[in-house]
Length: 344
Ligand code: TXA
Ligand code: MG
Image 1 (cartoon, protein in one colour):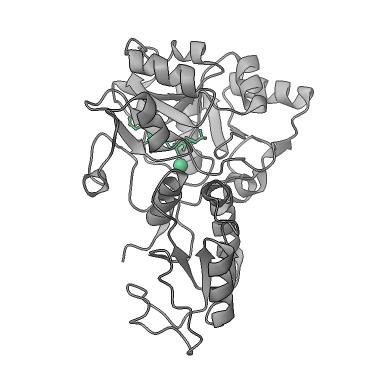
Image 2 (cartoon, helix red, strand yellow):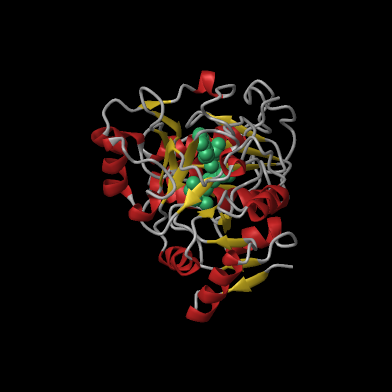
């Protein structure tokens, strides 16, 4: 079983030494917990893939202490890389850039680009700095499952397969970083995330959002698989306001398009206190969890994965989720809900 560490100086030093020795350490970041190992140690990187049961065609993000250290991982000669790193790091932005030779193929799945990010979490930056290495870290969940936003989520998902978990409390953002591919022309947002596309376009106006229709098979976005972040129960996604809220008995098949078993007790994820009130009053559903009573997409992002974990553990058979408005960080929340949803 993994040893849970605190954020004391001693424990941070212990975590840093463990990374240097090639062990697996789950670290808190502002987005989600990452499962970290020394990026230059092939055995340790292979152990990440094994612990997560992640296919090796899905490349990892390399995390660094500072924007300056990122230069040792990737080629920053593109001035847009400089601009984004200077403006957005430390923070929830991952840049895909030409890789340096030392970065093992296993980290990049054989691509000649590498994903690099400087996380905005003091404890984790300190640990990376003490370790003196760049760390490869995917989200610390078994492959394809809900991402972890607390140390307890990590312990439940991977506790028996990794060495240490540093408990830094709940992640403040709650959805993963925005992945921007600057090696593409025009540059592409491969994954919406904690930094909104709108904000990034203010810095790099030519930035485009990857078209999801092409995304599933798009070789530029390895690992952008449609079935990801999935709870163990089928999750059905609805437009905002589309779930039946009339208390006229059980919602029927027609009222719930796409749902295989509309009679099953359903947990609900919704957005905003008025909507939550309506859905609870309807008496048609099991637990109704409101991602943000005050309709703040940032709060919804912070709650998303932990509410999915909660519904997974609650006595309901299916999960019905309503989307957020598709803008800003709401886009990242909708992306994760879509990837978690049942594709039949
Ligand atoms: O917020 C985050 O990004 C978290 C924390 C731990 O930093 N990490 C994370 O890692 O979400 P992961 O492995 O779950 O997602 C990494 C994404 C994947 O979709 C992967 O395909 C993409 O980044 N990626 C990594 N390297 C790439 C590359 N060279 N080209 C294109 N996409 C890449
Ligand atoms: Mg992940």
